[in-house]
Image (tube, rainbow over all chains, first blue to last red; front, side, top):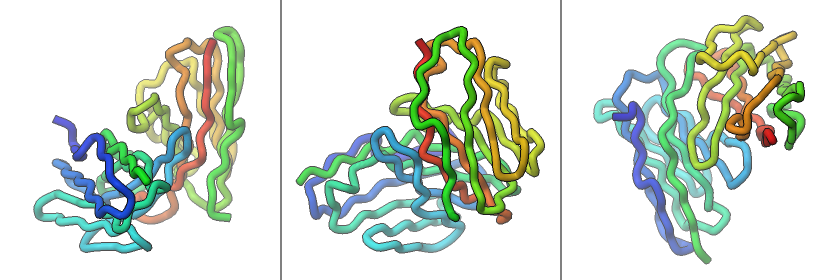
Length: 110
Length: 113
């Protein structure tokens, strides 16, 4: 079993829909990261969470430390949101490695 | 300056060539990472440098040779690569916080013929 599990693996939505991507982890962490990668592109950090909830524009990320679960929500989805969304966790300790989930391929159709 | 830059963007090389990938950041970050990413897979960690010293080597073949000449620059020297080494090579850096927020570069798309 992977230490970081994401669901769903693939998600297709119509423009305007509310989207949720889930991430569960099984190890101790200092932070959970949501990353975005467009086709052929580099990776952008969307959120880094250690507790609670963060919002940036149409994106919202939540984390439940007790349940070891996080969700990424996209409100009013748009075709430009089409990308791979990756959940990753970092253990305590600076300069340590990230453990990545397998990613969720999101396609938003107009 | 809040970005990580990587050069070249694309690289095509033969199996007998020697080439280098370059990564640069001017955010004062003291940990820098090399990742390899194959299509439709998450990044795989290759190396980590902390304060210009190699702190993690994920048993990477010796045909990949990292170098950190100063706190802003990270190189990856390539020699005698195989076609299966074709991938996107990503660099990232981490600032002096305990939560390891990583700033990624745009990557170098490497093709080995």
